[in-house]
Amino acid sequence: MKQLILDILAFFYKPFAKIMPFQTFRYLACGGGNTLLDIFLFFISYNFILQKEMVHLPFITVSPHIAAVLMAFFVSFPTGFLLNKYIVFSESNLRGRVQLIRYFILVGVCLLFNYIFMKVFVEYCHFYPTIAKILTTILVVCFSYVTQKKFTFKVKIEP
Image 1 (cartoon, one colour):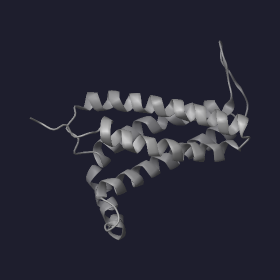
Image 2 (spheres, helix red, strand yellow; image 1 turned 120 degrees about the vertical axis):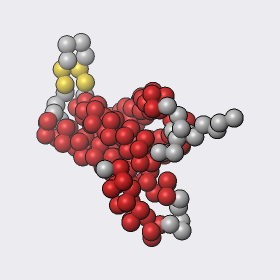
Image 3 (cartoon, one colour; image 1 turned 135 degrees about the vertical axis):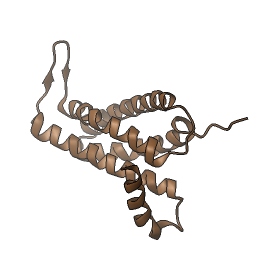
Image 4 (cartoon, helix red, strand yellow; image 1 turned 90 degrees about the horizontal axis):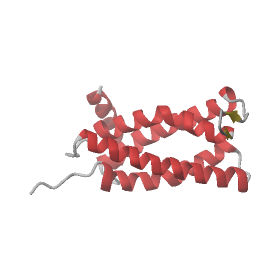
């Protein structure tokens, strides 16, 4: 499966070869696909599963746009990690466990950013939640790429 994905990406990379490295293209393609999946799951969760209603849990009530972010997260987290580990940053020589822990920390920070931006965009700027999610995603993806390249999946220089 890994080789099939890499072959497909290599085919579509040719027009972009002069303007970006293959790793950046892989990140954009895999991250873009995972992001579209995340936005799609958010949209389905918010509009059809939660039906734009508050989620009443035993000790807390969660707004539907925040609950939808969490629901989408439970799918996009494992797919994002696997794509990044095996397709985008496969040259990283850090142990898989270290990568997973670092990825989990990064995703936690990104989830916090998602929460903050969604709250601001929906509740203070009064943006429609799906538009707010798209804007939030753009901001968080930029932060995430730099952090993954320099921290989560970095190549450790051997002495």
